Length: 341
Length: 273
Image (cartoon, rainbow over all chains, first blue to last red; front, side):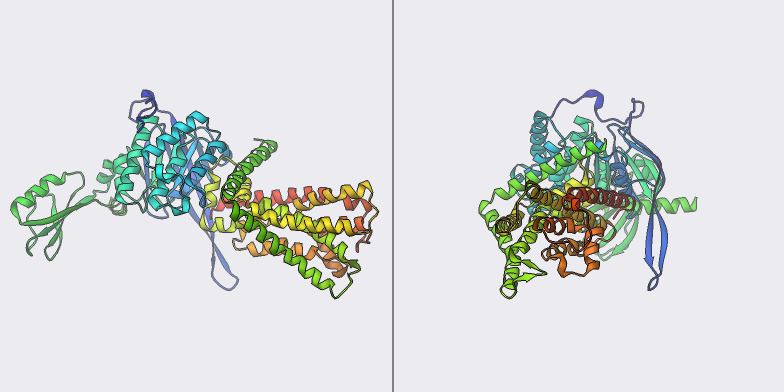
């Protein structure tokens, strides 16, 4: 493994408060309105406006890793599409590295990397290496730089044995790693990842996350990622933005999100025999009992270790697991809180 | 980036992608030879059908076999070249449906060039070769007093014709932005068009000839230049220079197809898939 290029101290993991911040991504009151036509009769159609993104504003500083989350249809992909120049916004202003994405799509393309979890940017029927060779020419990457970046990606993402395999024969995890490498050969300043770990096995997920962490630490690459997997966010992102109905609901650190949503983790214990709800130290409480299995809710910010120790000391424990709250639950709680506030 | 810069960037991207597919095809030479041969043979069947017809008749609409061969050859080569260059564009609707068009939009190259060069298939040269063979034979066989102008007309008509067909491919693809399953409509104009052009204009109704001359000007692929070349009257009243107008018509077609493409892409980028 190549321990990487020069880690430029000025471009390390940025975004810490007090640092000199340069906004790489600026979104000001961005809007995207789609007109949906629905058949309501033989020839009658109803036109309905859908505001996929509705007055969205945020900035991302160079070197930040930002998790962009929200329920399906919240406007995440639409935002990414506007930031890459795929979609033209209906209103507001967006700039990425000083470039208006919709007006100068091809110029911007040289400075960004995009990975769509659901579809590949690789050339489907050709060996993986062909996609890289084409990128080398198409992005006009200097030869030495191309070699260095390719070698690095091949080593860190474990692509060596896959280079001559046609893309269509790769597994989902292999293809995703191949896609990430393809997005990085031209040293993009921003990397957009749309569900980069969706459908991956545990090992592939860990590999992808480790790679992204290193990329950000060593190259200072800014990362904006959408995901359904809270672990992605926990392990990668210093900041989370939650979007729903095209609006920003929360922007801050992940811990703050848990507090905002008062989210809970769940300790699931299997006992030796059926028991009534067991005694647990507050604020934890038993939320469900089913035969020998009991579910204990406790605040996400608290450590599971003390709780496990307390339960193990008092009861005959056979097995246990800890479940993280999923994003949908956290967000649902956020709403409930707002509604009651 | 100005229009000139965009065209240069497009040609460069087209070349890079087409070369990638060519190299990949050439890795399996035997397979390439066989598929090219198959393409040659399948299109040759078209001409066999015409030969069979001529075993019963001496002329079609007053045109003998060798002259029909000129029509067939001009349209076959022009269509073959266009199909080789941008035939893959008909897959646009598929790409809009499955969302993979987005992956082309994040690359630093014009989408039109990327789409045209996608799956560039050198085997399509088989169709060009077959058309060229028929064209060569019939040009040698026809009874024409060759003048420099008439000799020059052959490459001019071929180039113009190839570009006209190419523009039809692009316009058809642009339409698929609106109607994603319209590949068949496009085929009606491209493949259907070549079949139409294999027969002399005299056998068709005047309305159809007018449409193919002035509306969708496929007539400039072969009917108009071939009529001049062979000294046959064209059913419509056209000035004599019209025979040499194929490149001009092609330029207009390109401009219109380009506008259609821009409109289509703009509508895609404002509505998404």
